[in-house]
Image (cartoon, rainbow, N blue to C red; front, side):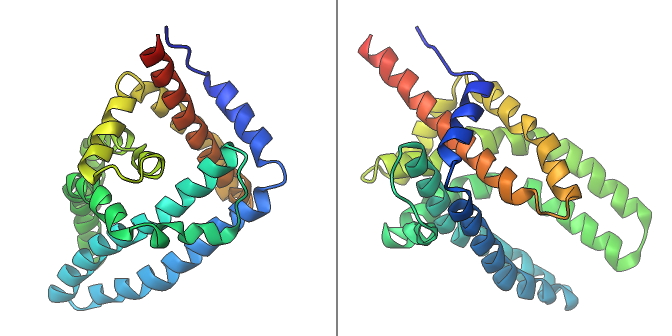
Length: 242
């Protein structure tokens, strides 16, 4: 019989394991944010030269999404290790570069391709609004975003465990990591969605605090997600043993 932890229990575990580690984990998010700003923002300047510049920008954005998957492995490593009581430091953010970075890129390729149109179309419509300042394009962007929202959530949740699986099974092939994430999330997608939505009010407060509160909220959220994965694995192992 499966005995999943409640959202409140997972969050309580997260708060407990974060004691004394907030500075390290927040520092990793700051480092990643700076890297993303330095790398991503200059690429946005390509849009100033339509249409070739915009095509190059969208292609570059897709490639950068794959590139940053290597850093997301580091984030998963830090929070998974912290949940298990292991020593971590801000340098662990670069763990993905020391452990077959190409594997992370290949794993991320599938969800990125599945989300290519849902991410790209609203962005194209929004850029069209900024170019000609016609509000109908803003409306089209909103409609497209709402239509694709269920698809984006489904794909994101279905493959939400891929980096944890990758770290837990270093010899597992990329496609098998994707299948393992799907197996783990079978029957648990609504649980994950509930946990994800439960952080929206805190995130809003963090934004209203000029971003200062996000240094607390981001580690809290990611630690809860890591605990969610460990809870999934523990229940799956318990079911196999029984």
